Image 1 (cartoon, one colour):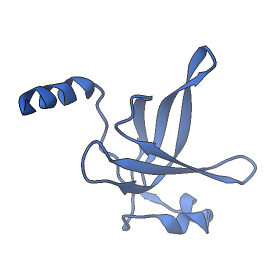
Image 2 (cartoon, rainbow, N blue to C red):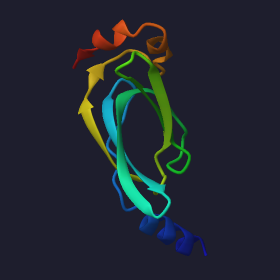
Image 3 (tube, rainbow, N blue to C red):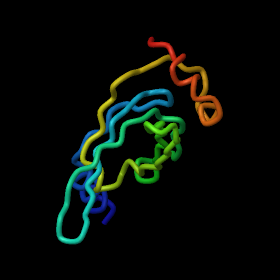
Image 4 (cartoon, rainbow, N blue to C red):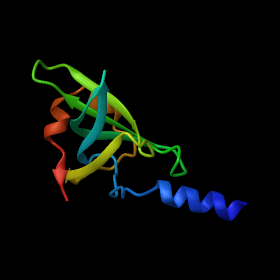
Length: 115
């Protein structure tokens, strides 16, 4: 019985998730359904937190600053079937596991240095 459950988990886990760390600038492509239409929406931002221990409950918090200067944060469960793909754009060097300080000083985003 446990073998059947593990096979089902492996079959459901088709997509590959890249190595995501706090500080990475990523693009998350998510399926959105509105009425009878469905489309893929892209959200680009910096990973400020990564939570969860197992693959099923792992989440990332992504923050971006929009054109008007408003900060937008979204929490994405990585095991969600609605996420079609994730791409990593930049991998800056950071020394913290949680980058909550970026909420209060947006200029810190520009000062993150590449590896």
